Image 1 (cartoon, helix red, strand yellow):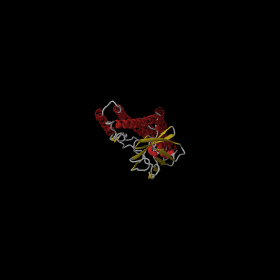
Image 2 (cartoon, rainbow, N blue to C red; image 1 turned 135 degrees about the vertical axis):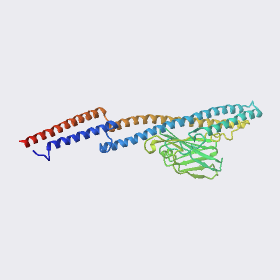
Image 3 (spheres, rainbow, N blue to C red; image 1 turned 135 degrees about the horizontal axis):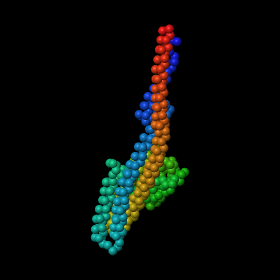
Length: 384
């Protein structure tokens, strides 16, 4: 029998340390609620969990972004409903003024209300606001990407021939069910062409024998707002004018609806200028019979613009709401996955804690008894 080194007691002490350490770890896990509290617990599991946590946080924020987008779109659409009502009354007044039974004095009185309604259009366009963002004044009328609507302005256009083209040319690009359409608006003229997938240009035939040709790389590039060239052709005897338009700028307003920076996780929003000038009614006047007849066509175009804009906003809102539903499902599944990796199973951990405590107590008892027996055996040998 040895005194300096007692192998049996050393073994018991080692198990006591192991059991107490395991019990302490169980206490830590039970207190934190996680089975992975440091990289030492599960290095691979910690890395996966942290990655999921970042994605979960991003998706949660993206959901809030989408909800804010819905609110903004609803605000704009609500203001446009007021614009539509104003245009309806303006059309009624123009129809009334275009009737030959009215005198110019009568039309002058009708024109006063007509002009007041134009002022109402401007007031609505200037006052429609969401969190400091003007919605209907044309400030959101830049090129857009994924929302499918784009606009390029080319000013100072003048081509001779059968009819001059002066002012600003605007091109609205829409996409629905994979079909691209471009509407050219120059002055009071609006022409819409359909774009096929393989097309790289399109030509609009305008009144007076004039033409407008757009060159682009592909229909997809149009969705991103990229127009390479705008060629304004004239009628017989006139000169051609070519304006270069390059780029591919992002939308004036974009909603980040995903956890990363890829283009398919952004929705662009484009809203045209909904003021009286933006709707082509800046010079509309019904104080004369000719003016009333001309105003009727302009108002009809304005109503079509507002209706088209409202339709575009409705489509954007539907997409945002669909995205919200998808993000909610993704968030739920990621949280469940991350929970299975990192969250603690309390029942199992309490079982482990109880087991380690019992083993530690048993080891302590054995260690104490072993030490007592060793002393007694040693003393008996020494006393003989």
